[in-house]
Length: 109
Image (cartoon, rainbow, N blue to C red):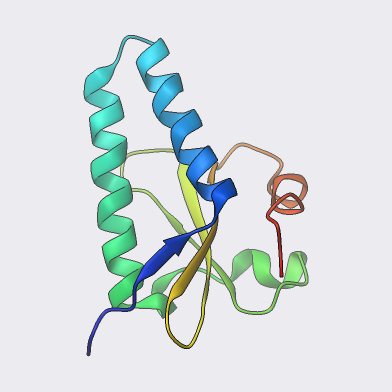
């Protein structure tokens, strides 16, 4: 099966940039690089197997099809929806955030 392209929304890109900036501000370039590598692995996984993420928040947020996948060794969660031709990444949020509040800022269609 061919992997679907993974397309992050602007909010997701901002989330990633914010996380990298935080790691770098903490003088931890190694952690920043680890975060990027974990994110790349997560994107590859959801591109190949979009159904692997948890639908945990879909019902709570009334967003059918929403899934989340935790990053390995990092506290961030990738929130996405599988589309017919791509995987739509809505947010990349720290798991300790108020997810419903932050997801309401996801520029939903």
